[in-house]
Length: 274
Image 1: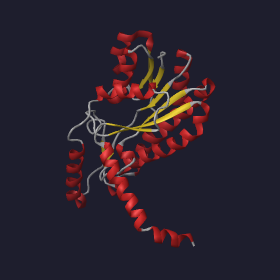
Image 2: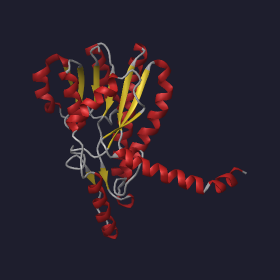
Image 3: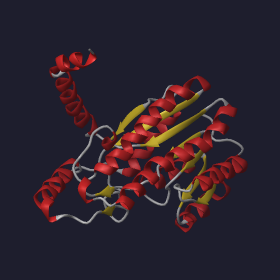
Image 4: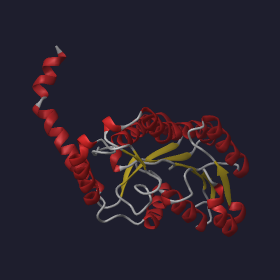
């Protein structure tokens, strides 16, 4: 296996931190972005020139292009681009402000889109590369109290599946990583919360209980690094892969229900054909 060069967003903590560290520990090189690059000082001390810390707010398109260009100029190539930066916006749909909704989409969708667009010319010129989009089980299913987060990940899933069809003939792979609940800070200090409406008090309690049940046995972010390395080292990596033991059962139940509904309403679908 040859040395890989990575560009990873959101490396100050969580998955991004674990994956950057794992790549560096095996001898790869990493351009690691964070809003506060001082959070990467210990990695710079450990790995020296193998890591390039870059201050970046992924919602800034020009900054994304500059950061990817800087990484390519520094390392001379890019092999794996990981769009990990993002956060969870909590709140029922009626509770969300315009700013909260727009900020969620700007970060989780447009941030990944801009970095992807910035990286593609370099990957095309190489005739190789792997774009890893960090989605969620919430990118193929949806849950009360994180509807706008679901919307952002569904959008990421859609453009990434189309992207895969576009760039596969060019030798570029795309993988959507869809984690379940993990022991990261996703629902903690990194999360944002809309002001709760009293009319939804009971529904909020039910939604929180359902969330706690979904993440009752959270995954280990450190263990996820070995799984990611296996994905990026594969000759034919998957378009989608779950991280964690529970997402498959969630997806199976969801899609079985969808199929049953579509089949039940097929006569109406045919009627609409005319």
